[in-house]
Length: 224
Image (cartoon, helix red, strand yellow):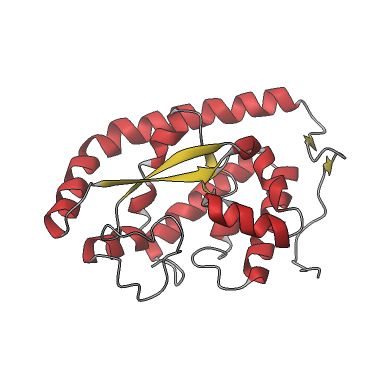
């Protein structure tokens, strides 16, 4: 089944091997994106996380037993798994690596609810950026279980993994975030992700970052 979205025609193309061919200099584009990632992530770590981590960690541990951080294996570039870092927003549970968070999820703590709605729980992923496992902007990485499942039923799903996954992405700022109850919801995200890969530009990344900040301040219905 085809899922139509109102998106402009892409500038690039996908080769037979699934590798994106940038019409300009791919090497320069990748280099520029990486420089932006490192500079941006360093600024966040030094001026924000340096004092926010101790504060949020204390609040998390005061409310529930367990570590302040949660790390989960997710699918990275070229289908390579990596540990994605987050502030722990749930009580420690056996389903964390298999079951998505849902609205009214009893596993989510009070502190966890706040940091999820404001996207504060995602901020430790700037450490992933400095490690080279993630980018500031790109397709969101999924749990290994979901990668295995959706790659079997969503056309072009693995094309998302030809680039480094991001803390935020075009699909997220366009409202495709949160729990995916139906396959069509993931199919729409994938289509937007592929459009982003084909049409990447530094300006587009900046726009997505600004939109992410605005949504974090305003809140989003699918953030829970």
